[in-house]
Image (cartoon, rainbow, N blue to C red; front, side):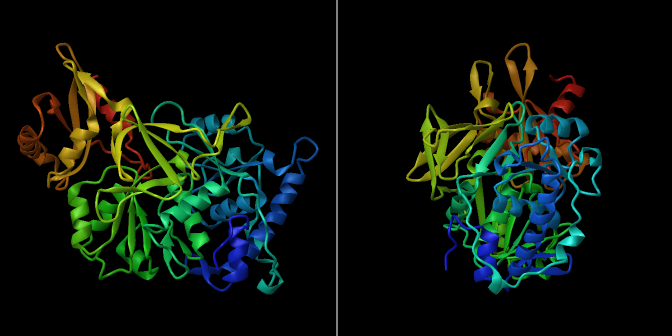
Length: 482
């Protein structure tokens, strides 16, 4: 029986799929019926918290923005799912942010409701106390449950963009956006009630949020783990579906036992950055099905996805058009609006979202060429960094690459290239750079060939899903190149 869009997805599964495992975490398994009970008891406790502020706050559901500062865990997952049921806005923030970064976002959200995990360094921001140990006190049997209807066009979350160009925007989705995002994803990455999906991306990122919704709608099992991602975790938890950024994939491929024969993975979804040919070749050689993906927060995660190739197919319920070589998007997964000046600014459903990416589309296949704001001019010639990066990633020695313009008196700007080689030995960097330079001389017009070769900076925040531009800029400034 297919789930209906206007029903709470957890309650639906609790009625029709009640003994299936919904969440597996830390040697514990939670059925959909049990999960529904946890939400019932959590709702009672949170309602009390809200009512305590009744004398000075509006308490209708549309006014409640529940800010959550926590890493992935059962508590955060419960709050995400409860907000869908109640029509509250789930607002997850990265717990690795500094106090200043948290304060900036709290100022935008203007919320009196902020839950902070007990192990967080940001406890001074907490305004909502929840005793999660009390959620096990009362249970209701599955045959006593009735469907809970929700308004799928009602806002259910605020997720901040990465802020790669300017200050991050507070993006609002409603449940309908996520529902159709999940259905469209099924076209290339089938997910069913017997599958096991690892929550390997943070919930404050749209990729993590979408992973949960896809899994719940399918009636499958979400796996939570505090352990480092490795082959043992994948085997023990019988993971069938996995979403990875480049850094995570590199770590897994360093283990020779990471093969399709050694673990039950059916599909690997790749996003967040460009993947080198060597990584994709290794995945194929080890028997995995992989899917490159182009997506964004504004479109509730995936827009176009490949199937064991670099050919990105536009998924159902998404619309793409190219105007002046730039990508525009809309469709059923497109954002509901923005939160700014203490208000929800609704975007006309027919309006196209300008992505700032250049690209081409042919017969429902999308080719993404690069970021418009990364283009620069050297000696009168337009340089698109992503074009050079793609050529570099085709070389068998290159793991990661990033292009950035540096100042030059004669040409205005020249090309600096940051590289991480597969055999990442700093003593061999100059030798490897010379080999790559000789290769690029055969592949690129002279004005597109990099002028300065630099080692990839040491980055401590491995949870970042985007290229940490600040680290590259800092290194260039240190060497007085910009």
